[in-house]
Length: 453
Image 1 (tube, helix red, strand yellow):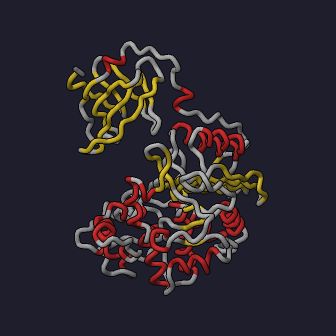
Image 2 (spheres, rainbow, N blue to C red):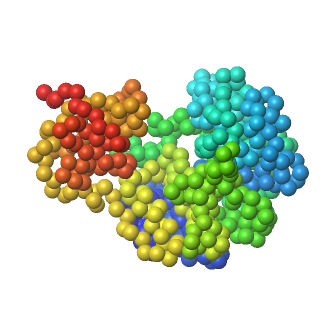
């Protein structure tokens, strides 16, 4: 079933990569589909090496647990103990691990971007300390007051690991985690600084005019400014090493079961509530999302995302199953992408998956277009909306929306008819509906401000 699901997803443009599913350490399904370069010349291989993105956080958290074992730090140590220049009193190691410390997001930092743009270089990881020590950098909230997922806390954890251990963070993970776990293809790489170390490394690709382009060729190229950081990303590996990681955890080659149990315990906020819980998880621990399934017991997982990259990793701790999915091209359809994600989980839980369905699959094939001209025109902008529709217009008998990105012109998106006056889009789940009062989306109705001439 896995191969059929991935084949369907590949044909719908939402999967280009590798996967592996194992039970009790035995590989049940594995494979590779697509290409690892932008020109479709290099076929994807099962041992192709991918950037893990935020799945990397579990390795940073593991490094912290090893330093706790070594007696070099405690989970409730404040970060100011290690970096007094950082003016974030009360923020502890535990807060950083559980995203409850109020640490600002490094990806929003003007210092890092300024070095990249003005000095034409990618700053090294120690720039995180300069960013957090800046007098203008303030916490987002008081320690333990709320959960807010941030890369900045894990960037800081990597700097703490490096300072306390006395060795580069990359070397610490290699000697204390990757090598003991038998993960011989795994390492931390900063490709923007060091270059690509081998032909089996894949390129992250985004949609451009006429096809896929690499991230550094795109409008997302500024993410390269953060390529020198550690802790939140930049572990590179393949599906086989991720299976080895699962076995190493079970066999206590890197961390004891007691240490893992601590990591799989959701954090708590100051009011006693569980941090990081939502409709998919029971909370966030140390680098892991946590779910207690009534049929399969404890499941820990993490996803990762960067422009042109999506990764997923699930470990069924109690029922000894593991699933890893690595995808290196921007998805073309949000519904189909979610269908793949949901289908993989269904198969792993011994259930029949729903078909991967794109917006084209659910759209009305021969819609009534008689009212479409009346929808066209300029519309008011919603306040604080993620999607801002500026204008509706028709072209070649199709309906389109011209969007805004804050105060600048955003992309033009096609509207696909899914009901009498309802439309969907490819790159999201939002439903756009028209009525006499205007256009409604994201729970807001915006009036038309002028009609098309």
